[in-house]
Amino acid sequence: MTGPRHFLSLSDAGGDAIAAMINDAQVRKRARVAWPKGKPDADAALAGRVLAMIFEKSSTRTRVSFDIAIRQLGGSALILDSGTTQLGRGESIADTARVLSRMCDAIMIRTDSHDKLEEMARHATVPVINGLTDRSHPCQIVADLLTIVEKGKTLPGLELAWLGDGNNVLHSILEAAGLMKFNVRVGTPAGYEPDPEFVARARAGGAKVTLTHDPVEAASEADVLVTDTWVSMGQQHAREKLAAMAPFQVNDQLMGKAKPGARFLHCLPAHVGEEVSESVFESEQSDVFDEAENRIHAQKSVLLWCFGLVA
Ligand code: CP
Ligand code: NVA
Image 1: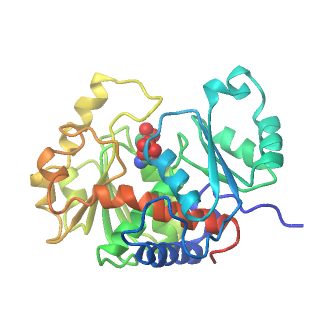
Image 2: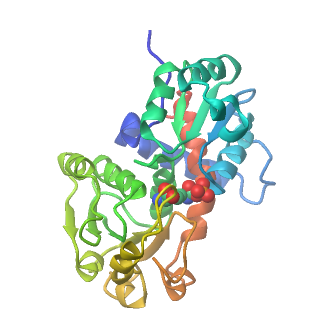
Image 3: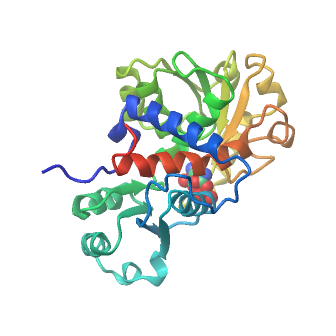
């Protein structure tokens, strides 16, 4: 017997399924232009399905996009903050997974520890989705790839520059690079590089990954520049870290090194004036709000993949 389709990482789906997700998201997005946001798609493909969402960390986009995504697919969602459930009082992940599997059709969890996500998946008999851990953020990257493709760029051979902290979002970008065959120039200060395991996997998949401590080298001739907060949830604000990050701010000077027509992405929330200048954030090259909206369309594809309805 095969188990449920968990989406813990982009590799769980693989390159072909991610391409199918991007395609499905575009088709569904086009079919409902100007519709009320809560109106189900014509096929209501997940009618009657209930998604449980567990949040151990704050969220705006992930919370709202999954809620609207499941509604547009004809289902419904319920939100569980760990502080107000028995998880917050020490009930095990294993028992929570088994109970929610009896009551709901899928579980999305945002947690401080990737181990907890894996524990949830081991014990759940319904699909488990990674809504961000300390290690990765795969749902975000499906939305990012959708946005890049919508802007007319082709993924194989794309030159993507990452500026700033070598964090969870970068890890999922590197995973995507190996699966979708694009190249990543990673510009971080010394000591803030991504986990070498993600770099090795991207390279093994055929992506060219350049690691540099020079922001100009990272940005030069890039098709897309991406950054994220310098201090992720659960991390301490350290003055030395912010000082080390300062030269990696995506500003007009760095955008000027990229290819003409280069785009700017940021998963949000942004700290304008830190990792990105206001001039770039508000510029015509910035796609951050298309990217945020695309969380809905991308998350619909992730849900459909989990239920075997995409690829
Ligand atoms: N980008 C993202 O995951 O946003 P939230 O933290 O608001 O969910
Ligand atoms: N790297 C950030 C992403 C937030 C969506 C964090 O983990 O806080």
